[in-house]
Length: 477
Image (cartoon, rainbow, N blue to C red; front, top):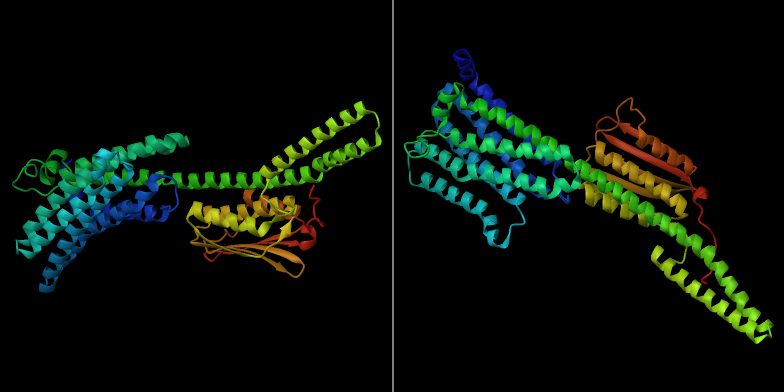
């Protein structure tokens, strides 16, 4: 055990660098996975969790930098060491303040009587900053004041921040993830909360020793002697567990996006199918009933028997009521339109807008009105949705462009991203095969143009003759 302790002490700076790397990696992962339009409350707190990861990493990396300047031993290096130590304390307080704010966001909405708690994060951090400034302006011994600020940051910001964040994660797991039926995400979120509770204990256990309670009873020196290892070792283990669990929990946003995309696809399919049914009812059943009504009216003029006339009039009234019911039913099936075809430009614009709102990706759409049959529109929209879904989930792209344009006698749909591109020998999965099948059903062709690191361009080209809408106006019966 003594040899192990000596080894950790000799490699303490490398341990601190790795410790900082854990938090920095977590910060990057959280920042990349942040969702602006997620319906989960967890998403609104992620920017603060990312700030916590970055600031805490900068605080930990400060000590190896200080050591390098101490080795140099120059006068300028001594002054820079004091600046670095001051920045270290500032980053420590900032990281714990961000963690506290993250926890408070997870607890929203608070009951009315506890609404004031929402302001405690900024109030505590502002108080700590004022004390930081006073120590610098009053000329207190900087080294001593840095230790005091370190302890105050741990007890006043870090401890409540970790406890509130742990409780907030529990609330999120109970309030939202149970309803999503994602047991593996739910369990990881709970374990992340437990890791934060251990982190809260270690925050105060690693406070610098000061001649005041409780820092004179619980501090890094006493904790290290009881553990027989450097105190940072325990904190590294807990931090690695928390970072890994947090990164796994972020999978919930990909699952949420996929579910919303599936819902959007189902809604679009249902809308197009309702429009098709309405068109067939209008052109088929309604016209036949209307014709039967006209025939009944003409029979009334040809029949002389009063009883037969009354029977035919009752038949005509029943047919007229059936026509009215069919018209009311048709009005609920599709939007008012004088044509039996679908403006695929309007549907694709709505699809791009919904996909951008759901995924948080910047999606630009440019197109021109094109009338096609509902059946062809269903294939075009499904093709575009599959291409968008692939780009959102796999391309890791900040921008997607969708274009619908006429080129000579063909309709061309282009979905282009600026992501990582397709692998050199991509395996045709369900998504790519589905797009190829849609292209064949439309009587067109599809091309996948891609270069590693330069994005992917999906081009669907369909002869306009294959999309020719039905001619003539509908009877307005």
